[in-house]
Amino acid sequence: MLDQITPQISPAAVSSNPQDALRGVDRNDKTAVREAAEEFEAVFLNTMLQNMFTGLQEGGTWGNGAGSDAWQGLLIDEYARTIAESGGIGLADSVERELLALQEGAR
Image (cartoon, rainbow, N blue to C red; front, side, top):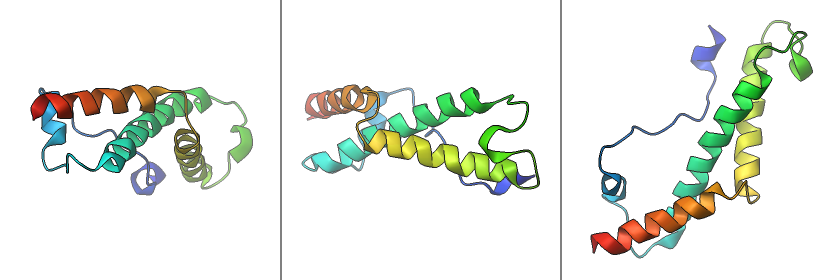
């Protein structure tokens, strides 16, 4: 029940053509590409962290009381965003390079 109201990072819809992700993006604005790459890394990290905290016997940091699932989701989401914005694990850099290469190829 609480999972339905907990705001979490959700992966974008998967497209068959990677260049579809670039439609409507200002090709001269490199900050939008960086933000998209960091958001992708945050989604990846969120998925990893969610799996890491699954199955804790006592609920870990959150305990196992009422609302603990909501707090767990919110905290993991914030962890993922903070890690991605602080340099992350290097995934955003690779994604940014690929997006820029796709932009250059689409011109």
